[in-house]
Image (cartoon, rainbow, N blue to C red):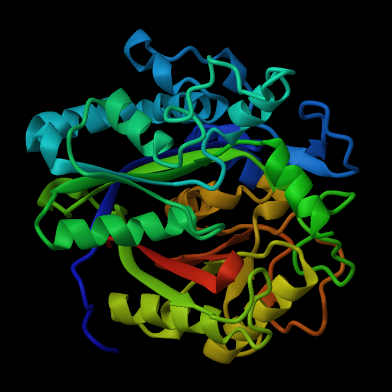
Length: 403
């Protein structure tokens, strides 16, 4: 075992919402009850035969008057989640201790507020084709919009950035924040992701023929493709302190790699995914056998699950580490998946549970990983969470308990 390459960071507060539930208590109850929030798609006027995951109450959110320029469904979802589990209050308290300019904001997304532009295109001027004057691109469709909104909503003044690297987006923000803290440019960071349902995403994945016409079944021998879900999740990263207490959740490592192989397909042998996992373990100074649970990327496409499974077997051995994909419960939250599953991984550590991969019925025998179909109590000290995106952009997070 090698020494850690970087001092860990404390996830002092975190929260999330998905179709499985809003807030930590609801999310945990859904996981513990092996439930799924997926349902037949009824978003807008979509006619695709697929299932989606929708967060309740998003459209009821009203943004503060001073942030009205950022009004869009994506930022409403972000606001809903920022107010869960006392998260916004915890960040503002930290700003009082550290200074508003010493807390950064790093948000992952793929959609931002593109849905507002989609709706605007339905109301173009019939003569000129001009978009409606009410469309605020900067506050909605612009990829920086969610990071700017979160920083404004929390009253922060530190550096802010959006990461948009497909499905690895909100895992990679942990690395961005860690580098800034390690460089001494900030003392803490709000990290997370937010992606809401939109027509471009649904019809785009439909055009790739990877949408399942039933709830997605990761690692199933008869898997048909993904189910898209919307979600948001946030965490406050701080340097560990003496008073954090036993059981504090730490960010121990981050690994990033690029397949440099194909626009949408992973390297079949999983070399890029394996490299990301190896780097996360190396940063934390831990050996593969120390990991107690792997939250797989597990999108339920034939190519993705096979490549990731090959990577896991190459690094950990056949059926050596309990693992599962929780996308059968939440759907694939795309740009928000990394942060959502980081929170789910933190709950695995907090409650000592390797989560079941719901919806999966008959495991693919050609992928010899230790995939769990039932919740499995265990004394888990380390969890590895994988997020792999289009273009071969890979990111693995290593989370652990302070004790």
